[in-house]
Image (tube, rainbow over all chains, first blue to last red):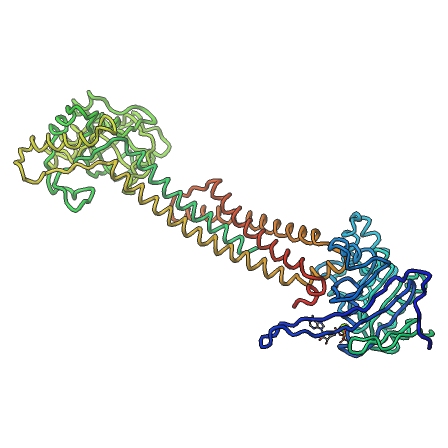
Length: 244
Length: 383
Ligand SMILES: Nc1ncnc2c1ncn2[C@@H]1O[C@H](COP(=O)(O)OP(=O)(O)OP(=O)(O)O)[C@@H](O)[C@H]1O
Ligand SMILES: [Mg+2]
């Protein structure tokens, strides 16, 4: 094991510097209670890396992922995504970043109900201003690639968990992002299906060079990654390359 | 959607009934004739409009002719009435037979639809001629043309000179078209006989203009007291009623009813509005997660607001249209079932529709705006 120094030659895709996150809880008795969840997290992730984040439940993995995905804002610290300071972006620009630059895959799939798999995958393209026919065409190609071509007209509740997660991955990929953020994408799936989903991620990373950051509790899932980051109580306690 | 439909339907229904009632009263008033007094025999009692028959018969044809001579009076129509059996061939019909002078039709502003009313010559010679109301004509003759035919009233033959135009309901709810009119003289001598020896049941008096009505009323009172030789301080044995005043009361009552229904309609609109609001709020609450997902995949605030605004619009327009249709259908059912006149105006339909839409759009839009201003994580975590 050797610790990774960020290569100074190229700008890393993700660079966070002393990121902190404190939640304020409204409590009836004591007024507001602050609880700090992330403490000075600093990380650099280069293009093409496949990073697994592990840690105990409550260690702040999801909190960190939400910050990396521009779904939440840090209490302090800085985050540069592809060289851009995220804090300086407007609401509109953040929406555009979420739309174009990254794809988020959730543990709970988070597909839109009452919408077909095809429409779910096509929706980000519509927000990007792509025409309906073109969006649907591209969505259909992606579903085909993830082996769901037959299911494009199914609604989420008619699909298995693995199929739903593949729809969600297709949706994350539809705008050709450089970065995929996946928060326990196999958390709700059995071992066999998890393997298939991880195969998809591995291929995306190997063949298309897409950067992947993935949270997991399981060592054999983390084994797909080329780098492992461990969090404990909101701090990075371990960061190393692994050989696959 | 349901709240929307019911709210709009209730308002349309209430308003159409209220307007219908008002229209009915207005029409009855218009059908009465203008600047009218009714002079009845008997002292002013509790204020009942019509004295029960047979109590007193103090008014005569002479009184009527004398009143006609007053300067402020345009015309006088002395009237006798009774019910009688009518026959035409095998058809029987029992109805009100009214004995009148030719002035009656002028005072009531009532013209014939077919044929003519009888003439002054008929009146003087007490001819056996009759003018039919629409309903009576229909009942006796069906589709046949009654003019020139002979009907029997209490077994005596009468020639039909014409059929009157339809007049509709009177203020007291009688169907004015179910009646026949014969010369007063003929009635006195041949039909009602001893019941009215020279007396009349009542008279309608038409003033020259609305301005002279007060003056005319006192002139009539003075003249009749004098003719009836009533000493100072003795109660009059007749009553003069100003129909304009009565009409004002009736119009007022119809207005009050219309207002009341309007108030009920406003309440139902309010309740409907609250219903719409709730539905919209619930749907947005349910969909806060959806908003979170959409933001996570790159929807900006504007795209989300546009979507919710469009959805609210569609719900409101469809619900509003369904409500308007239901309201109009309901109004039609009421008019059929209760035999009531209902009036549906574009204004009331528009009012109901736009109020409901405004409520629906506001409460569809406002919570969506709130949800869209959350950070995506907050919206996603929303339960
Ligand atoms: N919205 C919130 N308000 C207050 N506290 C929060 C909120 N979200 C998370 N926390 C707290 O932050 C801490 C970290 O939560 P987080 O979801 O990041 O953990 P995690 O590492 O993803 O855990 P798991 O493995 O169970 O998913 C927890 O103690 C949690 O209680
Ligand atoms: Mg988590």
